Image (cartoon, rainbow, N blue to C red):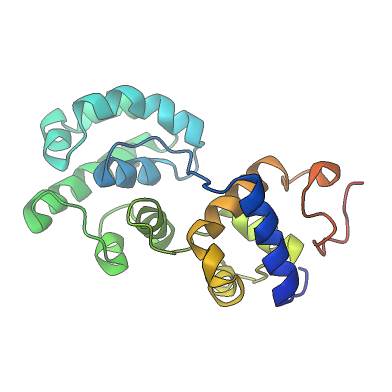
Length: 214
């Protein structure tokens, strides 16, 4: 685990990320806040591409909590059975849909606590939804961000919570909104788990990773 980088290096890292992609987007397809919640809940231990393939037809027929309840659990399973843990995920989606209808008038709440109270929605999922739909600077730490944060020294920490705190504490405010997207994309395509693509990395001179593949 690298030591925490100083302010000026972190600022330069995110200045470069911003220059390369000013408006980074999440890669999960969705049409509203509800379908985003469902997509993120389905994405646990699955790829975004795999989830998008499964939800392409699903969201045409079930883009609200009530429509999902009308579709039913077996109908949902027919759409998502290519995704890992699909039976448990289907149960959670049906439960959260019922709660949204009964307790929130079919609307998705925009507080972290309310989101986390929904079945299958953890802190990471809540943060993704708050960030992507409501443009709140919440930091959803996944395996890519955890790896990149520790390797580079941008946001080191022994736990997901520690990395999330390091991002909030150390990344300048003007980069907070898109920080987690830049880090996810960098971790997914450049700072990969095995043989990171250091020669092609736009921040390699600022990163403290000792085992760079040059």
